[in-house]
Length: 82
Image (tube, rainbow, N blue to C red):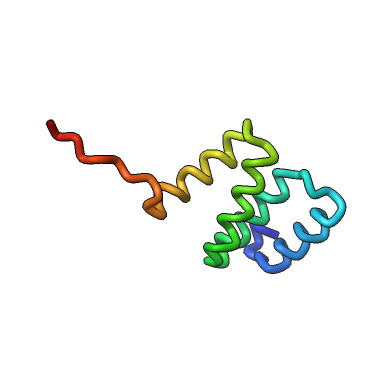
């Protein structure tokens, strides 16, 4: 569904799966991708955070979350020219 750009259906399907398997970080990650593709920033943040909390060793989820934080401007590098 993500490949076919059917993001709303992907979110609904993820919700159905998560209703019986709420500790599946891969499904949370895919749901976050669907929300991100729909430009629903508030929703994709919370879903990516949930995926990272469930599976903190998942490099894909951690990278996506870090990239989102960086793009959002949450990480600022202090100016240390001296």
